[in-house]
Length: 361
Image (cartoon, rainbow, N blue to C red; front, side):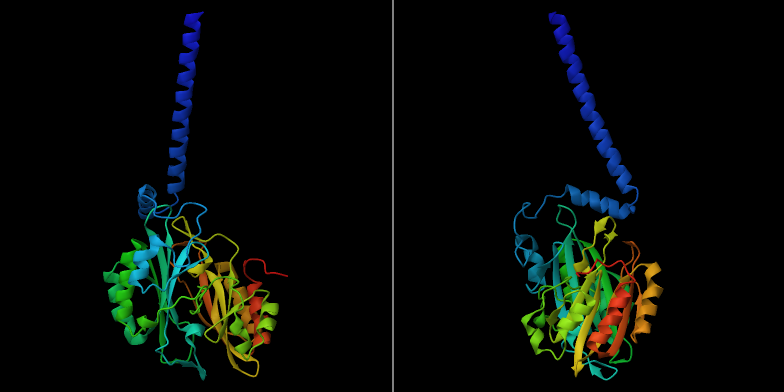
């Protein structure tokens, strides 16, 4: 009897050991399977990130508007003006208030189409980050800024126009980096120092969408400033079925896409530039100049073009902003100047050709 009990206990321990080994093997197989779809460099980065100690607040802890201690060094480098956005994103904005740009006779406000920005998001539980941004530059600033970024390890993912017939000519440089946030921030600050960007005026109001590239916070509140605009913002919001906000004399609306967008397995929140942006700058008498960009898959590009053109809205640029995102996205910039609510109907018709999140009713 005693021998039988000892044999039974030994068999149970062996079965338990086998079960734990099986769990480890299954777990490792899952990691290998997941990694197989990710480029080797990004897979190795993800592995290193997973092994790093976490500097993030404990789950359930409220994150301060400036990001708390984990972002202190980044804030210090970029002037302490970054604010947290949806998706645990820290964003800095650099409005080009030094530039005096006109397009089709309309003086362009910084919040309409002249806002540089850089956004950071932690990669997993480690200290490495994914960073993306869009820098607004004059033509003679492009080369020195690109050189400084390359020397600092920050990559360029696109360089192009957003609008047409503007003076002086403006270029938009999209950037990306992975690694230590303070080092990335220093590289960006050094690069901006090679331009005339007014760093002393660094600002990042919550949900700031000063660029025309969809970096704003989706569905931001309509600020109290709305009454100061010669614009029917309530009518625009009603037609678009998406609420906007006023920033620097511009009514800004952001419409995120419905699907999950990733790069190297990392999800890219809408606040990092993957939401459709629609900006309205009043031009008097209820009219507005509009610009921004639609974020689309390949199949959506031409239906959106047709919808915009049918409503008198000009397409001014079509291009990529990133290199390895999934699904593959294209960005279409637009321009018109007319009755703001009428133009909003055209934008809504174009939005209906995309898989943007379902609007409120």
